Length: 315
Image 1 (cartoon, rainbow, N blue to C red):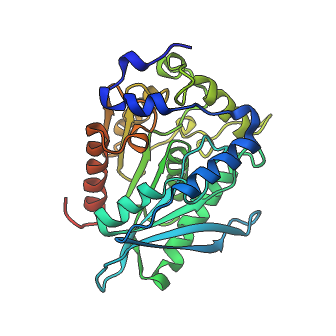
Image 2 (image 1 turned 120 degrees about the vertical axis):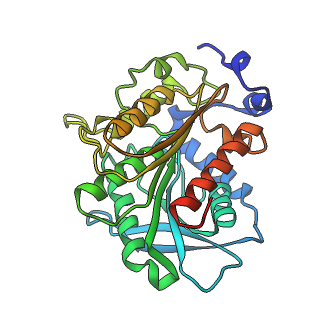
């Protein structure tokens, strides 16, 4: 278990030193602890309004909880939409796990954000999570207009495990002839169940997301005795043509670095426009842990520009 501390961007050292890792061996306790911490950390943002909604889910899970974020000050036109999936290794997290990030998109881009509380593993095996995400996408496209949202301008985004779901939902939408997606944003995405890349095995520091946690995550998610599809592990998708443009980033000290870079290159070869970057010296989800660091500010600003372009709002 090699520490990555000496290789870190100096602005991330404080966040790294505060990190306690993930006690995945006692998942019920960890979920309770994280849920309480996330609820306690919620802060009102005068520039953003939000409300919780119950929407139709897939046939085997008829209801989904989502949180809808909108700018507090908005014009008369319909708002473009980000359908967003939280991180948590498929094992933990709620619709408000990344509330700060959702608020950032709403106020800096001028869009709505629908944060989806999808089913978790190991209680629910893949592709249940992607099916929940696709149901939320279809609801946004079919009923968003009733809430002042623009079904013609939808982006699908997610962080970590949620980045997996963003990529998987995009594949589902293509294969099922579903809603048009303007942009996919799988950020620091957990894409490859094989965990066979150099970075997947090199990053073993338990203070941050690393190889041991990924092993637990994939074992919990994948059903035994079934072939792994791209809806479970997007890196397994054989055909990537016909997908929407991608914007993404990943840290240079993220175990998912290489699988993201590989996926980006496969998309380019398939004719998909890709704007992506690797941030040297940065651990997994660095921008969420140290939002004021220069690398985080750059990642956020690049995200806002990509969203504005996708929504036709200018860069």
